[in-house]
Amino acid sequence: MDESMAERKTQSGDAAAEQNGGAGEEDPARKPSPLKNPRVRVVLLVVVLVAIAGGLMWYLRYSSYGRYQQSTNDAFIQSNAVVVSSKVSGYVERVLVADNQQVRAGQALVEIDPRDYRARAEQYQAQVNVAQANAAGVQAQVREQAATIDQARAQLKAAESSLAFAHGEVVRFTPLAASGAETHERLAQLRDQEKQAAAQVATARASVTGAERRVGSLEAQIGQARAQGKAAEAQLASANVDLGYAVIRASSDGQVGNKTVQPGQFVQPGVRLMSIVPVHNLYINANFKETQLGLMRVGQPVRVKVDAIEGVELHGHVESIAPGTGAQFSLLPPQNATGNFTKIVQRIPVRVAIDPGPEARRLLVPGMSVEVTVDTRSARGAREVIEREQRDSEAARK
Image (cartoon, rainbow, N blue to C red; front, top):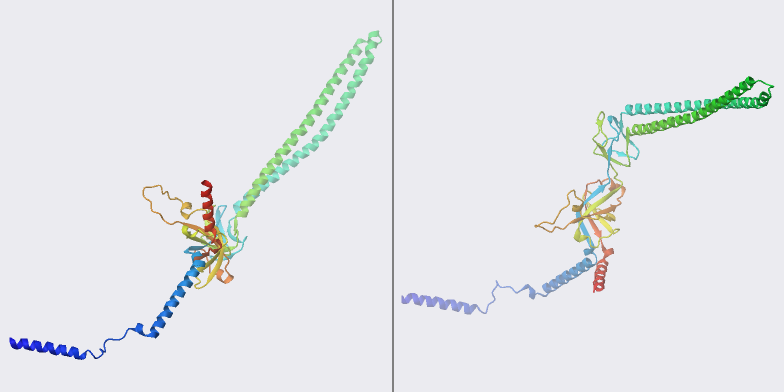
């Protein structure tokens, strides 16, 4: 036991001697700090200065430009497509265009069998001709009635002359009969002749009146015939319009899309046959958050990135801003007067007008996704104006 203790003391003494003896020598595992190197300090200083300068430049650019750029990828290319449908019913005789074909305004697209409408137009044309013939016949009767009136007036003059002569004879023979120079029978005969002449005058006058009134009746028949002619002309015009609608034409320039009509198909009025997409008149419907519209104004410049043309920016401007959120124009607008409510940032449609070049226009079609960025720097002073108006309003209330 004494020997083991002695050995441990000897070993600990040797270890202490080794430690004391090696204290004056440098440990190769321990290296000096890199921060003590002047070159490292210069590099770190340069990096810090560059980072500070970069951050300062970023802040200056953001404060003067970046914060006024409002972007959204909830945007799509749109076009005012025209739905082509028939106004008349019938069997399709010919389809004159193909899928995706370019068409011009007024170009024939579809022909419907026009035989029924042509026959109806011919029927109304015949009614017009009959009405015109009736009017012409009654006008001929009016001319004949004018001769009858002249004859009746001549007979009236003759009867008036006979009456005047008979009255004169009665006047002349009355004193003679009173003196006995003539018989009373002769005077009675003359008075009877005067009465007959008066009756003939009354009859002739009635004939003249009846003939003149007959003219009025005939003129009424002429008016009736002309009215019937006008009604037939109106029906003829309607039939001609329907006959013209048998050929369906393009209402504007564009490209045929969604064509579903085929020859031999029976079409009804108002049923979609195809669509005409005016690809020359494209615009963008961008849905911005309500928090992005504070400084957005009509006419502000817009940058557009199209997914189909990577790396190319198109330019446009804000054309209009919707008067309500998209939810308000939905079929069932939300009613938030309930016990449970979660605030959701609403989106407002903004219409952006673009004017792409001919080469880019060939690639753009309605429905494409785009990314829109609006530069709102032109309205940077609007917030100060709103705050000033609010302060003035509060001061006026006080």
